[in-house]
Length: 146
Image 1 (tube, helix red, strand yellow):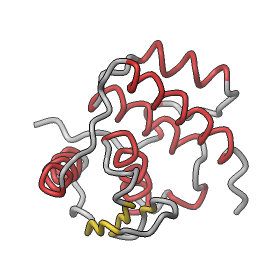
Image 2 (cartoon, one colour):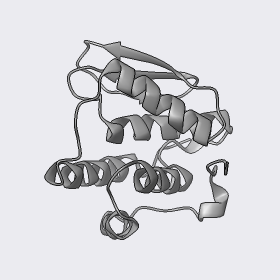
Image 3 (cartoon, helix red, strand yellow):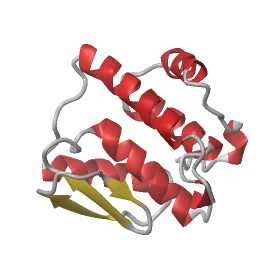
């Protein structure tokens, strides 16, 4: 299936990352902090935590079938980890066939609201600017209420 809004999602992501950097809320995380953060999200979404592999390669981060690969040089930040966790959660729910589609965007927005200092109004305003398709919240995996 074609990932028709992938480029727009990445442009939106760079904008949201820029806002976090301006708010001074984009620190590099240690391996221990990454593990704790990934386990927290996994528990919140009732999935088995993916295996995290930190790498010295310069390429892209990736997430999906039980694995997240994070280049040490740039990807060890909440923003990137959330993006890759969205892929893992949707894959576990057998909904990742669309890549960066409307369910991915909705889940990414909800997770950025819950785990970063970004607000829904900031995220939705930027999503409109970048013409992103956004699924209704009921179409996406929800955090488990404890």
